[in-house]
Image (cartoon, rainbow, N blue to C red; front, top):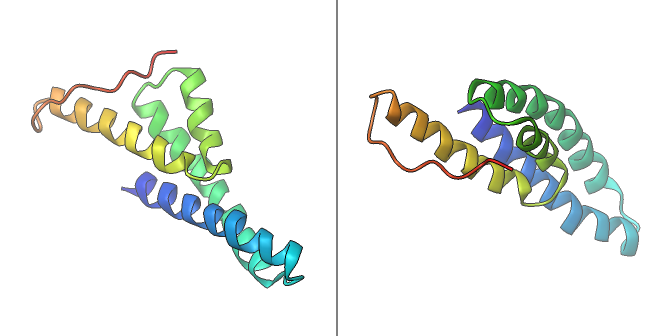
Length: 110
């Protein structure tokens, strides 16, 4: 749950920063959105890195995919895609352990 909340929060802040804050800064000469949202995204991205690293280690994600998940917080919409893939993989691993219905895991091998 922590990973999901941080992934969506980081993604939304980055989307607001890129598609609202930067245009306002460049064309409107207004830096308040960039200062507030950019700072919040920066601090939350650091927390996202720790939580995402812990979650990918627990799921035994290959190193290449782990790096992509960690970098997902720097590309608009990428953290949302990464969250969906990891959540499905987590649900599959929980289902395989007998805690719920098993669903096919998404392919994460490079």
